[in-house]
Length: 148
Image (cartoon, rainbow, N blue to C red; front, side, top):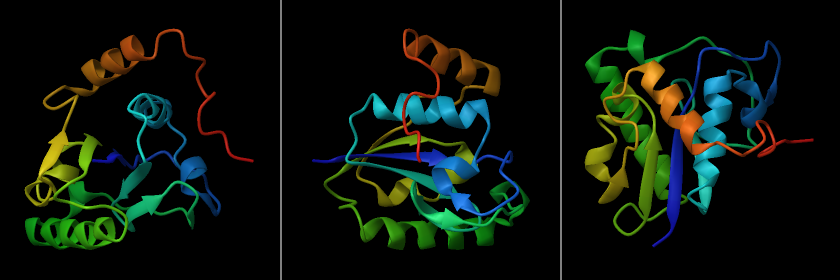
């Protein structure tokens, strides 16, 4: 069983084309990346409202889109797109998924995953920051996933 981590995209982005790992610039996103590494995953993916599933080194243009502005039908269609993308990289019935994403980004996705966990489920944003800070104590911020 391989472990995969799914991290949500964030609003704060660069204003020019870049690798997905660099596009999202918020401290919250960076903290999630560092925390994700603690699971020793086979891969970390970004859940993007526009692109579905993004690999960290995939180059993208900046965009302004969120599932929060999508209808339920659009959210379900988006989740199916992500499921199809995941199937290209993972075994949804045998692999384990750690989901670092809000309910909107996971609610229609998790029914397709046999094994998953959501470490910060139900936490308000301040509690998520606190949770991440506690788990990242002793690590240098920004030391993981620096791309050239």
